[in-house]
Length: 252
Ligand code: ADP
Ligand code: MG
Ligand code: MG
Image 1: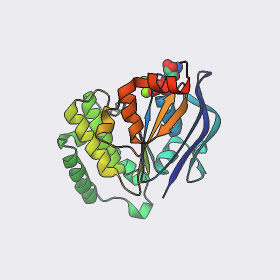
Image 2: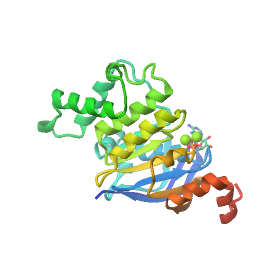
Image 3: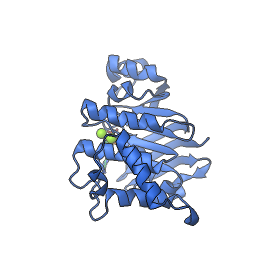
Image 4: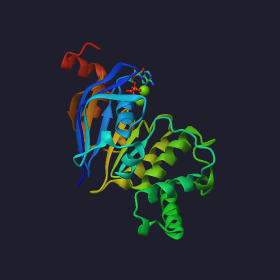
């Protein structure tokens, strides 16, 4: 079992404090969801975990099995088993999707244990079938000319190929039609298991109808204000964020 611990995390962007002391612990085998209104710092949290250079951690800790993640470079974090599916995946010219995934898989393997071309193709075919993706998507340049839905589906393909220890999925549901949403959920559900944990960030409850979280955190104004089970997401759908604000006496 692996543990990802976020302790009293404070993060600033251009000297403006966005995260004001986030506490959150998750283990492999669990799926956590973070919900919260727009602008509360959900993407900032994922960027800080992955080491985006624009986000300055001013206080607190991120520990992966007790190792200090904040001291790791971005590529070291990926090698240590962290994965981020971004709200807005970027295009990378000149590298195909398949090349990218093979390099990412091999980056996590020892020199004498690299994945063979045959094994890679077999694995790729099986995962693309689960996600209902056309074969040619693998040979296209990464995210170049991909539609919004294709980008999201592709993020899940990368997830299934790379098999990280912890995946942070930032608004993977945004802009998806219902069929794409089901496919993306199928991919995440297929990853569920003792060696995998996921932090699913979403503004809406909709995705959580397909991926049932073990733990739900509500984030407001840069901190986690409430943590509960899957029923908390249902409650948010029924009451909006107002119910939580009223309960906790939060005036933001
Ligand atoms: P969420 O993902 O919850 O919608 P974000 O983490 O994207 O929220 O943003 C939190 C706050 O940080 C917002 O007020 C947003 O305007 C601000 N912010 C995010 N990114 C930047 C940036 N690059 N420069 C300045 N402010 C930013
Ligand atoms: Mg947002
Ligand atoms: Mg966001």
